[in-house]
Length: 172
View 1 (cartoon, helix red, strand yellow):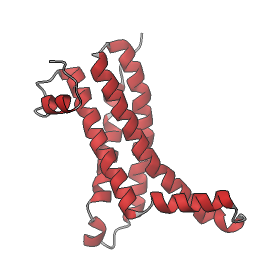
View 2: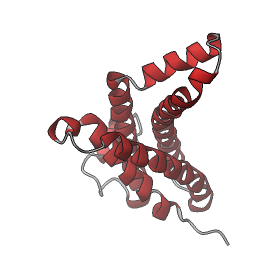
View 3: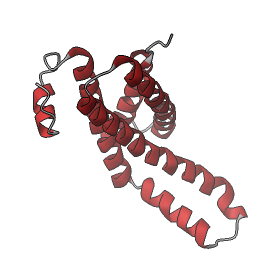
């Protein structure tokens, strides 16, 4: 017998990535300059991203045992993928930062290393990282709204009808 643990697993990455995005978007570092925001951001991002990967895996199992509306499920899956993609790009930027700090001086500056350095600078650029965090946050909200529609129907969320219309999902 399979159990649907997706509703249990999914809330942890939502919370971690929500707070990551909030810290990334709102300039807390200006108001509280003595706090090590970079460490807090990294912790929330890495564990939120890992949790999102687990949530995606459990979501695929949940889809097989619950039989939701296929149109809503496909859109929910798309936005879950986009969430993982946006935050994955941010995690990749952090990994490149670590790589560049530890190994760049020891490696010859060939084309691949120069490309990785440039990519790290782009992904960790303040504007780009805030934009990715904002896009990730919007995709989390949309994924959660669609998940709520699958579980509770369209009456549980006042934004459900508007978002469904915007996405072209006429299920009501």
